[in-house]
Image (cartoon, rainbow, N blue to C red; front, top):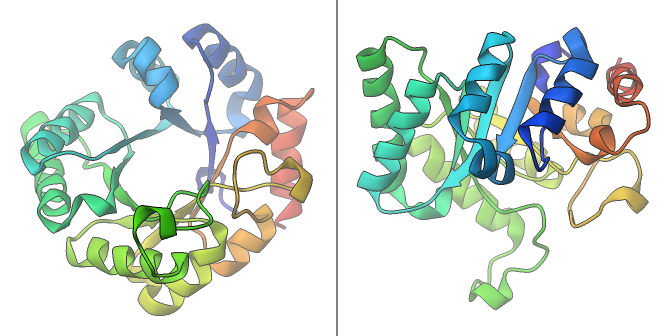
Length: 233
């Protein structure tokens, strides 16, 4: 596994705690996820701090709104210089296409690299879609939304480890796959319902692994990162 295939999720309550873990992990980790909790509390200044540290940034805000609003949010994220961001595939084709177009235009406008845009298919916390009024299986829904992401010219999709192989079998290298829900043991699943080990996820074809709590809650986070890399050799 390449170093930039591991994305450490900074699901923490403050920039101070996030800076502490980034400093502790040092050069063992080069890619970090900033999600809703941290970004809502600390915002763009923390993104700027990560960039000064020469880290790659995954802004995981899962944009989902009318096309114009999402396009404007993508423009702002591009201006910040993030490397990867997420939107909900269920926002529909107009929203997805507006996001892709906005990223390209903003990259030219601000002379920044274009961020990769990944569409979220089915959240890893879900195990049943019937209460949403959907009779399809999770696999069928994930595949349908992945097909929509490809048609909308996005870079990839976010899915659980259980859907990786299916998506890669159908789309190959045309769509990258980012997978959360990575755990070493079943008992550590927390609120994630559809999980897998780092080795299994990579063997299924994942391009990026997002791992948070197993590292953040470890007594020795740096050693946990080393364990992750060792487990996939």
